[in-house]
Image 1 (cartoon, rainbow, N blue to C red):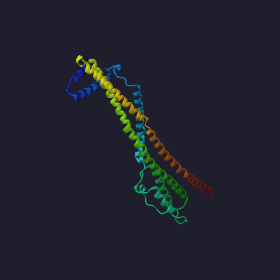
Image 2: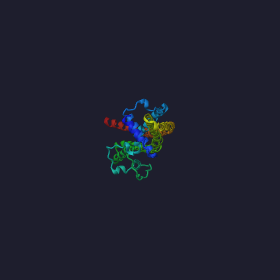
Image 3: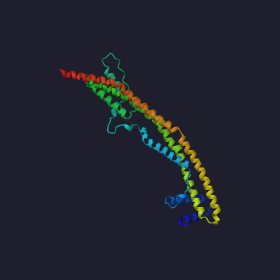
Image 4: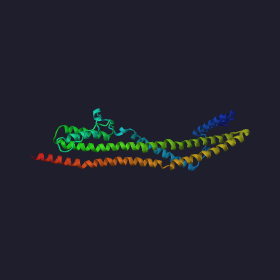
Length: 311
């Protein structure tokens, strides 16, 4: 009898109640795991789990990895400023003026002295978003106001173009906020929930199988070295361990199948795609709406420039 088996036999022989028996099983399982890790147990002596179980393990691992991989990236949607340029330093005054507020006041000044009704200035909104779309819109609004303040001249067309540009990015910024809210609610929360709940439950069931398998193989090792007085008890422990492993394996298989058949991850992914599509569609629509106007002003400015050079 080698040192490990002697230690197992002596420890298992202690009869100090049910708790001691449970502790002895845990100790024997730890010994079994250590011996397997050190290569002291031949592969033939390690109980083979069903192929169906091993296939399901691989698929659940792939599903878990998929959730982790995508979650690691998409969690940026929980922080609004994920695309806010770190190198820009907007002043408090700039941040305190929203795009819509600036454009309304820009229009109010532009319509002075004309027959067109001037829109009433609106107060700035208290919440200032720090995103790239909002930053672009604020920068364009500030530029339009600065160009307008210099008075009429060649900068009028650029001021109008900047106002168009700011207006487009106001719509894009609103769409960006809606996208992030939708992704947080309809993708991130349920995606994390699947990882935390159903996948974790399946993993715990697998841990129970692994522990039961170690108990069985430890019991088999103890049976091989049991003396005549312990032979029958040791045999019963092997049978009980076999029954326990079969039961836990069946439970784990059922739970893993349930996780893999759950349509929720596909529904969550679809919500992510829809939210991103809505945002990019809104951005494309906003920019395409103003592009013709900006191009018209650009062509007119170029024509005026060339005409001025002819004289």
